[in-house]
Image (cartoon, rainbow, N blue to C red):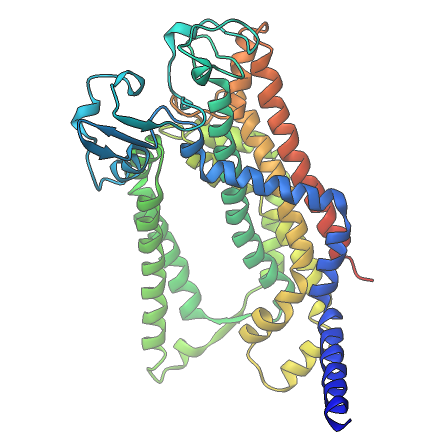
Length: 440
């Protein structure tokens, strides 16, 4: 009986602890989100799109996944990644013929044996999905048709999925980083709460100019050259490292100079962060975003999706900053923030560990809607042929081909449906987050 009593007591304790966990705001929000069927289905569709974007080269590619030729084994798709990174060279045995013309001992092709840039001259001239096609077998059929020169539409849709999600996620990541930083500073410190020494202010101001000049302006040609070939990650990291290094050197110099017992190095000034941030937001919002984006893309030396992502991120942060500022104006006056101040915690700790986590939910909703907006904006630009290099395939570029030949209905229907579905699921996710995070 004693043993049974202890087990019952243990179960009651575990149930009480589980009940406390279930009452946490995060758990309640997750439970409310799961009750929203549309949002949950949209999330599952998004998982599928992410899978397609990540494994696009393994789903649609003219290169085999695996092949054995002349007694040697090759993995051409994996090898291409090494070639793109400069870690290897393409095998010379594949230079003479197309991938489909070799006499393989054994071969495994992707489900769609075409990439977005593969030209099938035998099926050029806008082949319809239902039209008879000149293919060796059903295995090489163009299931969604071709364009004028023989590009496979389905392979283009898969490549466009990667571009669309990359643009939406990267652009809004840039926007979120800027918006969260500016919005949190403006909302928490206001016009009177942020003080900075004259020395640190002026040194950081000069350092910011030199960091931008040497990190990005001087290296703009190198970044443009690499971006035009389809990637600029390594060059961008170099520029960010230079930018960050100059700013860190300036702040290190401030730390050394403040050791000198002189009042001029310690004298502080008020910085009206709220006023500065909100005037900057109003200035950017007064200019139509699409017009500003067109102007910035027009002055670039070379067009690239990379620059489109960066520019969309740089002009889309204002709504995130405004929502976060409004939340922090409310949160900073709550009891737990006042208690943290009374305990002597630093402003940095209070802001990033206590105030900001409780003010982020509205910003997350804005980011979800922003991803949909960024995808739609990128599709509009590429439809107009702006910000796109010649070898890049997106949903917008497929729609542009349908404009040239209106009879190719499949070039309008399938990319248009892909844009509609993707934008809709992000909007439904945003609505789901709004309902899940709304205070009860």
